[in-house]
Length: 470
Image (cartoon, rainbow, N blue to C red):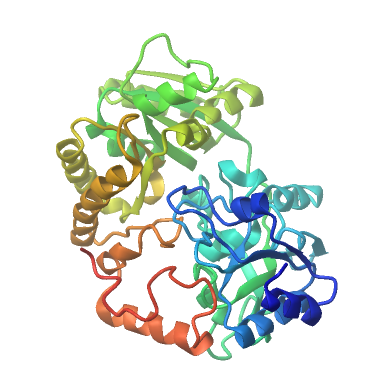
């Protein structure tokens, strides 16, 4: 550590774990995007809120930018440190601090993995319903920073609905105790919700009070094969009318192809163009409502085949077909679009989006999947093996500009659940108008006037035109 700033940090925060090892800088300086070469100054591992406060005070004095870091499972470049920033990893702050049976709350540090929270809730006979495939590695702090959604949003909503309180450390080192787990609190601005989805640009989340709920009712899982894209929303509407939907997830034959190549088992003898995995509140696999719903869809010609899981192990196999998609595509370095529209706008948007991408990507493999029940689609464009990465990203960025315009016409969002980060900030103007972005800038400037926290994410603080859609 030859940098004198780091020596001053060491002196200012006794006991702070700090590394400048090359492999650590590479590992902690990036998230699941791979477009930027990590180049952080160092990685700090605070073990307490007091150490986080001290680090941020040091950063303000030294003028060193700070990138908060959780599990780094994001897909928007929100945790990338490529310009000499200090990475502030919360991985040592991973304790479950308290449980309150009356309030049904769990207090945890920000570095706790989502799966740990789920297990802690179950140990008390309760349930934390936010869930997605990266549950074992993503952290609560990261979930809060992006208002993470996942596969249970249809019934339970996003992370925002389950945060009863937050402790947020500002760039000045102050610790804000936001909402304190209250159910009712009309005493001014609710800064807790301002911090949620702020991507680490307003402060560092160090602690959260999470609301828990009763365990879900018994469920059944069904996989359906669809003959065409056009019937997707008709199947959703039919199932929602007849069953208590817990989840409704869609994917294409190309997505299934990659998951099968990754080791999953084929669900049907024949290949179908589209699939839905759905979960319902039900009295087991033989609940007559399941067969009634399936029969109705089959009679309409909306469903070509289907299977109902007869055990928890079979249900897990069916869910694997959906949850393993992202991992199975990783080696292809996909360009990812994570978009959302209102569910009522989904049929019209789907038709236009499919036509747009078919025209713009005639020679590229495009893999679709998503949370159709809450209006969220994931579009993955796979890089041809012989194509330069920069050329590929430029081509996809030009198409994303058209997709952003389409989303704007349908009142949608360029980012449903992974944040804006570096990847999507050029398209922020398709989702937020100029007046709204100006207010966002003002809020950020008020809390971090020097632009210390996660600079370059969401928008460039010193460039008022950087967030307009090209």
